Length: 192
Length: 151
Image (cartoon, rainbow over all chains, first blue to last red; front, side):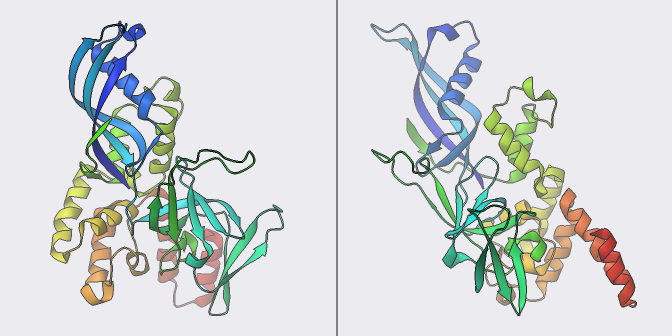
């Protein structure tokens, strides 16, 4: 699920941080720049693991702050295809399920990757949502929100940033994971 | 920004959890004082409820040693450490073509995983149920009531 990535970045250190020791100031700047942000093809940045080297410290003409070239490692969340992850159900509608990991919410299970055969029934409690039920050997297994759901990662995609978005659409998701429940051992933990 | 190495090493859930703990993450109430961002706390919350919360570096090294004879891919071992499968049906999505490659070895692998890695808190409840069910298999009625009371 998690990887280390080695990144080099040229960082401008604002003057108001001059009283802090260099390491802390740079770490703080890196965290505000990268933490909880998605880097295309690398994944979601969870944390700054360590700082390898700090170079530079030059002040360019016309600028009030010094610039450093920093080499550091980030802990990235980037599941590989085929990884099994346990997540909680966030919403379920007619297009499939949406799962959440707490720190990452854009996990979708489309209908064609649900266990075959299954059908959906309207949820009596929440009107816009639907309960998916798996029909296996004449027994019904509902996917309710009670226990955790195990799924296998089918693909991880990074849709490009849209230039314009209509006002009412869902907020843009820079990283989307497609999962599959269509295998033995996958689905809510209580099924197995 | 230059990406020097996109993949400088895979981390198990336990290693990330250990890293966050070493920086001072813990369950409430010290949250405000620890130098950890709110987004990192969400990752910590997720990991603490997964199978990684009871693991230790020694148990993972032991598991890696014992897994060598099964000739598993690195991704499969990573999945096993992160999920801690406790039954053959859980191994199935993790190891490709598990019956062809391992056959009988699956049972041994599961027994080894359950003995080397400690069970996470949620799995411990279900394992107690299974033990209670097995012991009273002779009397069908007692099994049913045992499962009902545990539930």
